[in-house]
Image (tube, rainbow, N blue to C red; front, side, top):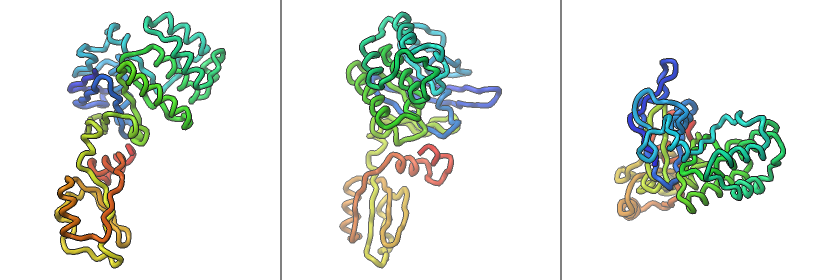
Length: 300
């Protein structure tokens, strides 16, 4: 659906994206995460056709998006800055969209507005930031776009509203194969819903892939050889240890090994405790990206 190749973009001579590449499968939910200033919003604006790349390609369904009305008609972009439409009431904004977009779904718009309990007669400028996000989300989704692009869509929303946003996204993906690209600086918001993740840092894509593929072979272990904390010599030599912390007699490890290697470790080293715990995406990326970089920790 979305294919970015060797993309470069600078502002006033300062590079924002450098040889950036990204692929988003059609009908998937893709989470773009990164540090503040990493270039996430710039990427979304390029995909939405708001900005023009200095070099490289931004393709949607194999076609360039910039100044291409046919492609843009299939895209709905919700920015983090929601200052537009401020003079309009929600009802007026809905009427405007219904006349502008041929695939407008008025029933869906009504359902989302009712779910959020938003006042149609109130100006968007009078809404709180969270309410404005809900209103603009309703307008964008009711367009029934082939691709929905969201920049920090749930920042500032309460848990109930966040749950509603995710519900409508997942339903649209399941029911009509909508592609969804969501930018966030927080992996915790992505973990339960995204099919794929891309990590951008200093204008480059440094890690990208299917969530299942990224976590295959990764395990979080808690290991103890007894209260004394004494470990046999070379206790973990047979494991590929990506990260390790010690607290008293218990070692917490993140390793990259298959099941056979873990079983050999248990049989040969005979730890008193060897428990496997759920591995979070935060831990996965900290390990994959070095773990000690403060800028990378901001992603998580």
